[in-house]
Length: 230
Image (tube, rainbow, N blue to C red):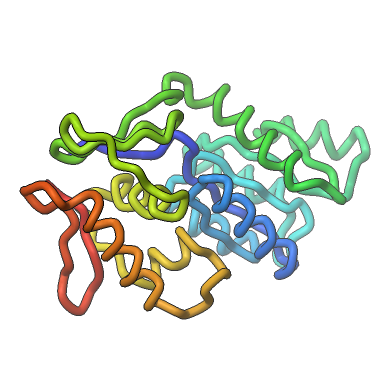
């Protein structure tokens, strides 16, 4: 099956301070990225190997090992994912070390969320050429990532921002069963903590707009969640 990875990309946020980690994850998801997180170097290595993110935001000071060691292990394992360090350490020696072991840049604490999003976007644009303007498709349904235009056949489908994010996530994972909890985490983050009812409501809204034409594309997998497939 063809990979339908979104233009904005998958991110792994590695930060041991919960408040900073949650703020970064929520802001990046709102900006259109798919985000997972880790709190230690060990968790980061496991997540990076399992999920193959497009970019890692990596705190240098972690409780079990520093970020430089995490990158060394990623590189020795053959994973060449871009890495942006998050650090309060701003010495030239640290910067040289970080870049030498395989990092792609630094974001110094304290930082603005706008700066983080801009830096992430710039690195992804540089390291993932050819994704701008990408279209995701499933059957006769298409979604243009850059212009936010959705079509079912020749018909343009008008979606709210939340409906677009939900369809975006479903199309990116076409052919995979997604639980309500997964959808809630990726589309709404902490806005509706634990309230999977909002997922059911928005799936219903989306079906009325996207699946008004046969054949149906959004399927309920009883007891498991939802899946988009032709």
